[in-house]
Length: 89
Image 1 (tube, rainbow, N blue to C red):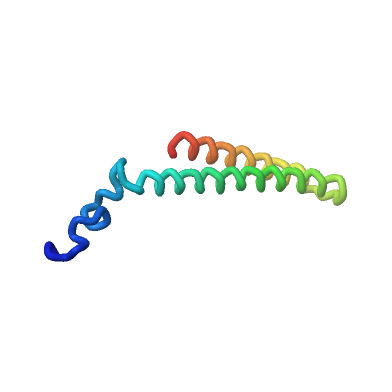
Image 2: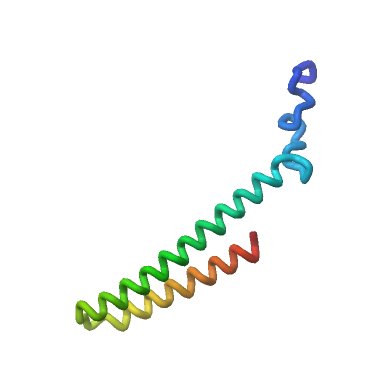
């Protein structure tokens, strides 16, 4: 392996994952992708809240309070997960 022309390449020596290599850009892109995905999930949770409130005005069910609680809880959990991901990543 030492006679290989690629023996001293950054890929073989692991230098690509050092702060001087491309690993920094890869990790930053991965973190940004996860944050965008979590932000889209928060938007989805907001849409779910909107749909539940619209459904309440359209269809009267005995479970409308429970659905509202679950929708609001879902939004709170999704906001918490987004905030946690923002702080950890």
